[in-house]
Length: 321
Image (cartoon, rainbow, N blue to C red):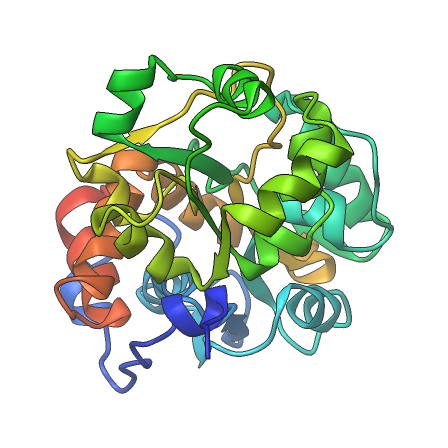
């Protein structure tokens, strides 16, 4: 049975029970603004990158004297996290801008590929639902199309447009492996093929003859084994650092930005804007190579997301005196 994205990325369970306060030390906003501490329930989706992001927020806020961070990391999908946070049942998690735009209420079909414009539109949607989005991290964990590096060099295919031309010509069609979600989602394979002018007839022929629909982790292994030459993936997958894999340029900007942003219950931020201020240095410290490395530490090295987040905060995120 093939694995879903969440199953593949969520193999490592949470590692609760360790306090980061002693590690991180004091923060600029540590002075209690009110007479009582503020509980902040922090959640995430169940796959590895989300757990790492969740623990980055949890531990950063745990080090603030007047915040009582509550670990609810690792359960629920995008919709359940969004709705629970909007209702105040949960207070904070990280959501991706592209996911919020395409998959969450009110859901949009218009493609917006400029990161700033997309963030502003998503922020407006969130505000209307009792949610606030902080400034996102700079990286996007959107879909990517990758190729076997040797095949790409031999064919001269370095962009998705060139791949589409190669597929339309019908000569020596490569094997293609995609994950199930990408195969079925309209903003995945069906929309991509149409946008890059692969006809329905050519697409159906490809799906009948050269396609393997599988789980995320196996797409890269099939490339390594030489069983396919093209595969789908995600921009922060650590496997993309392999020298045997070439990421094809999305030269017509089909894929939306998927930047993670701290997403919180609006009344909490209205009363305590310092919470987003505390998380700003964390988001600023994250970029695509960094996130790939953090994911690698969990998925390949076998470290716990909690431990990975702790070390990153301790070594890479400035703590004000």
